[in-house]
Image 1: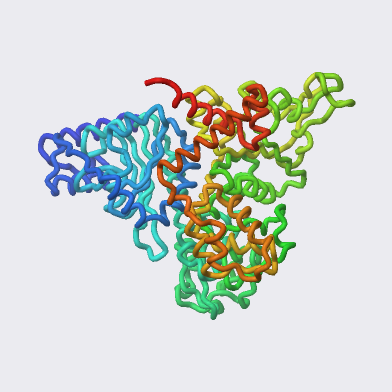
Image 2: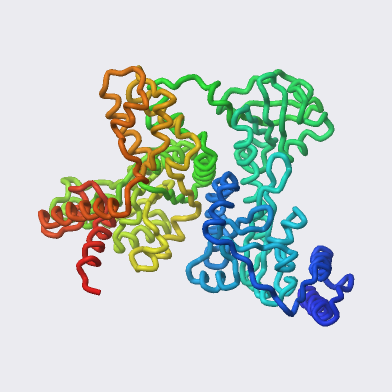
Length: 618
């Protein structure tokens, strides 16, 4: 009844606004009424919606570079939020402080409709030009707002409900706006809290990035909230003086001197004694008690790692000075602690298995970490490898049978790498397994329930695979309770640290000079961290103690992005010819060719597709 009455009042207010350009008090929410009045004062006519401005691609890229930090930090949070809200119901957008839409995420089934409404990167959503809209009005007010249906100033936006939350930089200036829009009928109140929390997560990451050269402490009354947006954050200088505090920290320490500019002892009873990675206890001067952790510290204060600290199975092997990589791993860790499946996306060589091992460690599980390369196991043997088999179940079955990898991972983690290469028949079997985590061996009759954390990784565009019928949509949604995307090596701000750690691992007596690091940094690294490690491994075979720029130039004489379009085409042709020759040698068996070449089946299919397209007449 209340909703019906609200709709009647909104319709009355809208009729008056459109015909008389008047906004009576009491018929709509005050924030909406004030926005309508600002729009009318700016000369906007609710009956004449303006054409939406859009920047050229060159101008957009220039503007994006100016906001690169917030874009990188927001990317993984937006992907996770898109899935949580419902990728087919919501479109997510990130805007600059002036309303320029920098990035958007939209389901393919609604892309044409959404882009037709102008919700596309490069458009400018300001209240003074496009009327009352959540993104533009949140930008104008620097506060959260929801604009539902007919509350929009222009009627052509009335079928949408939009939720916007500002993202503030550590200096409290506006860094951007996060917006989620859906059909008015699909709106659910919980979405407001989810958008606000996502914006707060991005703000926390901006704080850490802005104070990367300082020690940053997270504090909260409950230890499980130290890695969330609810944690208070404090940045300290070398003299234990607090130089910055986020809003959560100011709220927690209310009644004490302003944290920014205060000495540690002005706020807390004991001297600073937190150690990296360990949770400690703090008592403030009013007697309140907190859990606290040193979440980042200057790279220069970190001792040079030893070979023992770089064991691949250890959490210290994960280098996460880059904010985007840190945010991705934090999300994977939080999801793993809750037992949620995680999809790890990223280009070849970005460290997807390292991220999976990190999530396994973060989960606290005591069982094994069992990794499966779905592209390396013949399709006809995949079910038996995953779920085990009874003796004599098929030709070549092991004597006595086998328990299978899922059972080996009981109490631990099952990591399915190259999940995009899983055959459709196995996708159906995996979907059934996820219903109750019950394992029945091939050829067997008895079932066993296992307790596993399921992690998955791919560099395949699963959405495109779904559209092409190569991947099941229902399985995709089951596997993506949380999603992370690992940044390319070329995009990472901690490139130098990665190179130095890898070099120390490969040859502890060798050091990369600053000039060598500059030369390495200039390359595109299409193979990412794996390719960099292989290059450094070749350098480690030499006898020099200090690697110079000349050594790098001799090994990598041309940058990857210096290749001409013709040169790239020639390279692809050579690869395709090699694949075609291997296919001939194995009688056309794609799986056998993939194993022989050490690539995925999708790589084979793409190469064969290029040859077919070139050989087909127009």
